[in-house]
Image (tube, rainbow, N blue to C red; front, side, top):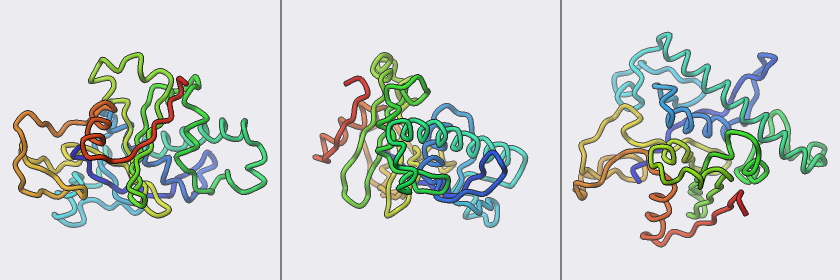
Length: 235
């Protein structure tokens, strides 16, 4: 699939300009989505993103310097992540208001991918998405497919744009972005490992390093006998 984990951080800023922690899930969703629609050009690698510190960092993360465009990208990422948090957690609390008192939902409570179940059939942007979560701990893959995703899946460009890929590691989420999106363009026909490193292995010339849609991802998982579960908002 040629997806590389990047670091979107875990802290964000709310409407009161207060720093809130444990927002990695929403920052990862926002980063994957915004890259897919071409809305941001910079790749972030943590809460203290300081691209341009060294030449090596510039090449690895695709940021040349801390310029106005970089700050604009960061602001859009932050705003989108906060909107997703409000949208998703509002739906979660509507179904389970008791979760607030139980500490399962809150301003700085870590969100988890199964929150998406509550918005797959909603009148929101997320109903157009297929969110694919690669769990590095279990080796399993979770797929959350919105109600409207199937309606335009025949359009490969549309479905690729609306296929959101993230990785879960212990207590943390990261966006998974195509190798070509992170500023380290690779030669066509060169395999990239799970960590995004060039393995030097030659692949079939028809293979591209573009953003995969859900169909491509599921075909690849089947070919490699990877266990996955699809939660479909249409059901």
